[in-house]
Length: 169
Image 1 (cartoon, rainbow, N blue to C red):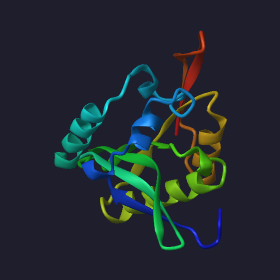
Image 2: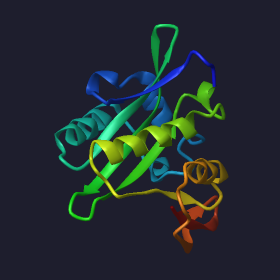
Image 3: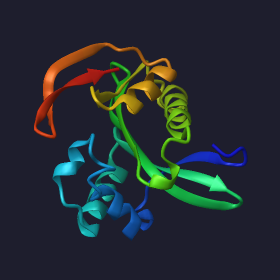
């Protein structure tokens, strides 16, 4: 990660939906460890989804922005929610869509940032993330951020004609 780069989470707005963003969602490599890989995303569908999330009281979608030399670059997204306000926990899901920023340490900073936001703004006690067992990078990022392995559901997801476990942190 460049020393002059700053990671920013900003609520995703419809005006942030670009051709590149739709491209990420339709890229089989970018979405290979998500259930989004089964969908063909269009601008209108994504805009409708973003508008729905913007109205939600328990789901929040953030653009992952990288500030480099006075420029803000949208590199991916993270969703917090649904939030269970009574039990004080939420799920997260995330991806880095801009391949120029993969494997540079931004995932670690991203999880630190969303963890602080969940604790400080939403007063959450727990954040839950799930990964495919063969998504080694995501597991390492979560473990780096002190997420604990809490469960394994054997052979839950079909990945390239083989079943893999669902790992829950």
